[in-house]
Image (tube, rainbow, N blue to C red; front, side):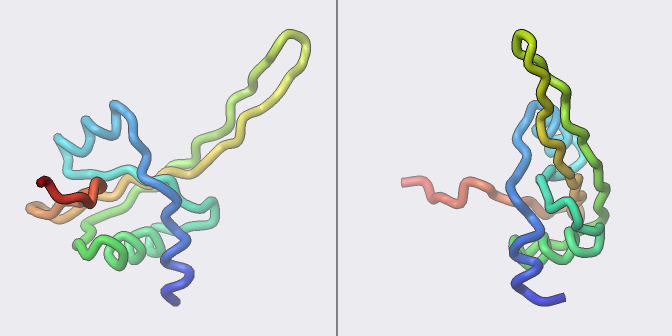
Length: 100
């Protein structure tokens, strides 16, 4: 797998209340990923970008919601999420800053 592809697989960390709970209890982190990403690509991307060891990956396709504003129907875009479980004792720091 080339490094350019790995750098584009992860779009952003998915921050939510459920993601925070899963991180505390199961040492899993949630990311939004490309729609064409596979489990092995996500695993390699996380290991490459954050220098951690990944135990497992679960992918989830989140469909877009139908919305309505007065008489105008619309639809939100869907996305793909990845639940990444790390080996015990490892973690990812998204802040990246240092305390002064």
